[in-house]
Image (tube, rainbow, N blue to C red; front, side, top):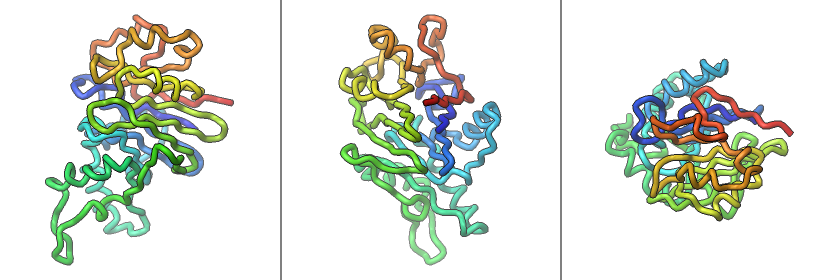
Length: 249
């Protein structure tokens, strides 16, 4: 399992793309969150990493929550796949993986731009663009060969962190969250942790992560960063778009 960092910025960044990543295994690709402009996000990071990936190669998307810097790209991703499938009916609908609270709201988020007329005269629905799959915090899911576990954070809207396990390796993905000891404990068993680091109260402060034990800090890589983040001010690695994380057994 490899994790390619696509974007490291927050909602207000002028320098980076929104925090997102791409998982690659022998079984396929999984997109974690879908910021705008998603096609440029994918193109630039994969070029830096030396990966050959187009949007039509990605059949699974996990959406951690519905803040725009994590989901605005769904519109263009969905439209492109729908147009591409007109000439390539072998392409599946992209599978959209999210929790029930996100599933309940996602179409109301997208519909003003995407409920266009269909050939049969009806208005389109979410199911014309995405194959919706629910993530349950109580039950692991299998996506492209990766066992996915999720946990709700304390962000202002329903948001999840992730544990991604494949081949005996586990990567933790904090999701947007204020500092929470229980969430840190849940992530701590991972071999590597990608943790957000921004300004409160809806996010985790650097000082709070710096107070963690050294052995845990060594696992943590920082993401969802403000543009003025001082990467030299911490021993934890501040990630950049194009970085590939591939922890070994």
